[in-house]
Image (cartoon, rainbow, N blue to C red; front, side, top):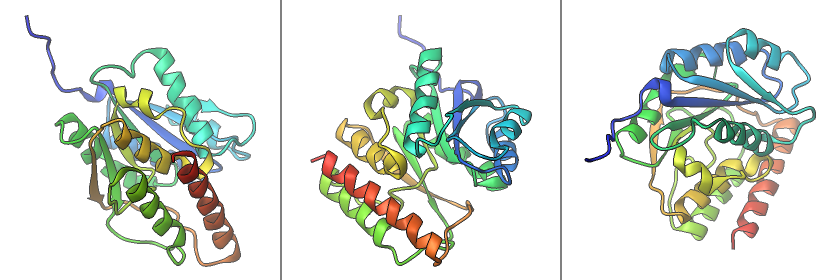
Length: 235
């Protein structure tokens, strides 16, 4: 008898929201996620927030995996993903959706990512923002595109987008995530090298973008340093 390979329902989708000091936006982000995936489990990976992010996430109905001190995005997300795997639901035909805690209400537009995986159009679906907001001169982003092209031959518009959906079975090939800001770059390279199909989708999302300020340039400098580490570690 053939195995039933029905597509996953929202009840078989888990959304991992990565956040650090996102008290201003976390409730709106979770509400947006609930709108996109009404029956999905929502798990917040709180990277040692110093504000009320964890409390507000729980009040919004999410489960929280919180680090006592900041580990960086990749470290916090790894703990949340491993908690999901240990709990058992991240297997077979399930779908895991990742998103950043600063998406706010635009998180309601994430459904096409899971739909692409559900329809078997891709094993990993990545959101490219339809509108660019903020940013610097493109050095970190350009290097990320170069790194992916050199390491696995893909040309990507949004190589470091934190908004992505993947078959739960892909997790075993991409964990642990690369440290700090290298998470998405490492995930992309590791997934492609393992033979998984990647697809980019343009979505009308918005987030809190860094500006061309001293703090913004420092942020992008840290990103670039993490991207270089990922690139060198995957020779």
